[in-house]
Length: 58
Image (cartoon, rainbow, N blue to C red; front, side, top):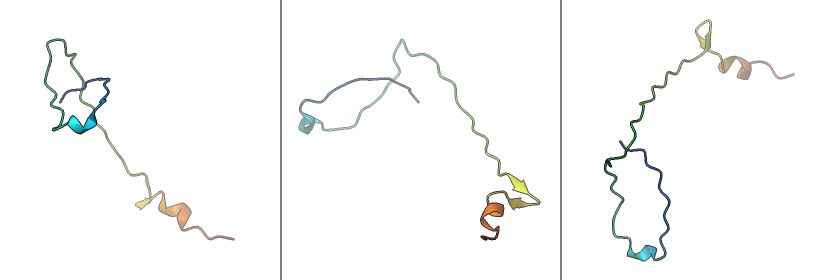
C-alpha cells in the first residue's frame, strides 16, 4: 500500500486510457497501519441506542 500525495491536472481527459499505478519510490516514507476497535455499548445486554428509541413519547 502506498500513501501518496499528488497534484495533477488533465487538460485533455479524453486521452486517459488506463488507471494510475502507484509504485514505491526511493524517497517513500514508512507508514503505520491503523487498527480500529469498535465496541457496542450495552445496558443489561441491550444495545444502548435501543433504549431511547423505545421510550414512550408523551
